[in-house]
Image (cartoon, rainbow, N blue to C red):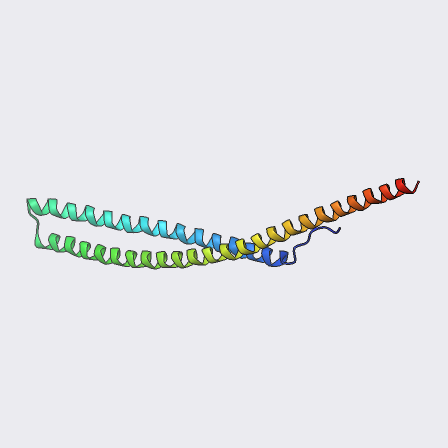
Length: 149
């Protein structure tokens, strides 16, 4: 009997390549999300530090110019936090969309792999059956030859 050959091997190979590509894209996006989370945290920390410094100096008295400079810096950091959080939200949405795409690609690949396993099992059963049939025919032929003698 000829060697097992799965007719959808090329499709399975393609699906696996697509899956690997999507996995790499998802990994890159999740890395960007983590980097952006760190940026947001860093800007928030700068805001907290500047606010703390402002409160300390305010307690001991400061000029109006200094107070306005601190307030301006705080407003700038608030806008910066908002921009960074917006970017973070967009990156999270992109990562979630890529995750859904990854799940779908895994399902496609798994379906074809299960079909291949089933076809391989059918092939093995067929080989075993033909081997058993060959042995039965051989035994029958030996018995017929022994009875003929």
